Length: 142
Image (tube, rainbow, N blue to C red; front, top):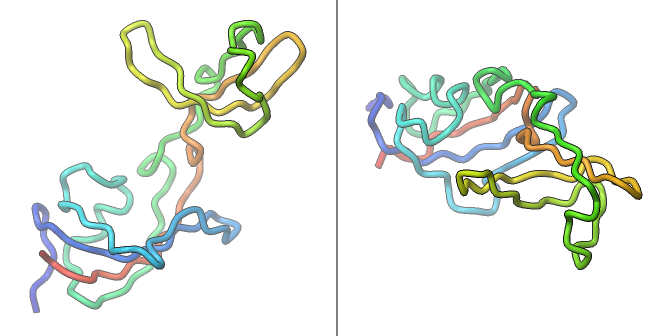
């Protein structure tokens, strides 16, 4: 049987869960995820477990935070005056917004606190600081 190696294009089905069992993402009901192993298209903590797998094989792996979306960085949160947010945006905790850096880079942020004077925005990835468990099935080596 052919085994996956770095550089192979593969298709997998997966279900990602948090430590408490909450599902945060899954390919269930969708086409399998297709990517090239070792290319940096998926998180390193998942990518490193694929070489050696054969079509039809299933496994459960854990991607620690440093090999997933990294640790949370407190400096990635910023309080901005509420007046700087356009009035037509209905501010509530959990709202996803986009900011633009001085160099023009678009940065996704999440509203984490709203007061009468300030809005606190968090640029950390929503899964930063989390160890992630993935149940994966190798569907195909393309």
